[in-house]
Image 1 (cartoon, rainbow, N blue to C red):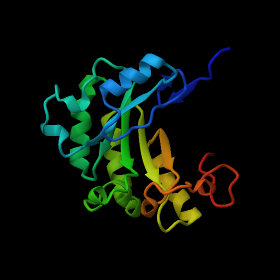
Image 2: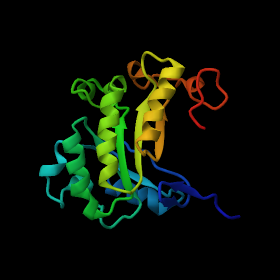
Image 3: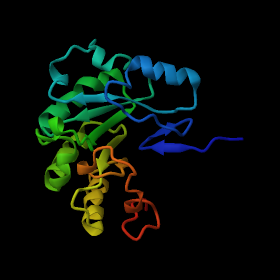
Image 4: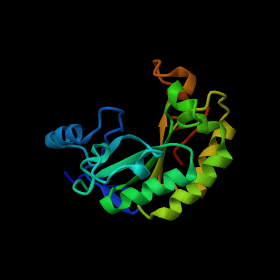
Length: 202
């Protein structure tokens, strides 16, 4: 039976299944283990601090495997446009599949710097950063977000439209609010197609 085709930007993902980025987990060794068992077409690095990347060696263990693995997205963290752009420019020679910007991390030690899910309250800043990031590469550019704490469907859709306007190829929605942490169950009713709250997929 032929596999379904999944495209992200200008690239194809085969098989059409992605391994989520996980801090302290999705390093080269873990990716190799999952790749050995098969069934996954796209992998992510761990969440990488964009302030640190520009000063690191290209041989840093933080992105070990890039340049060899052709199926790995780099996930970046931060809010500084210059740092994010310089990080992308630094890693582009290693030929990553694309770049993902983390707007969903809800840890207090991340949000206190204005990073991760804290950026959900700053749409103008998000738009400005994405404009700069999109100019750096034609490779897939994605974002990871959460549902805002002060959820209102129309405002959330307007926020998502920023991603479309700025050339983002895909959005991953963590179906929890920042204040939820990893509390279960997730708020699927807010994002699933057909919901009275919001329909993210158009």
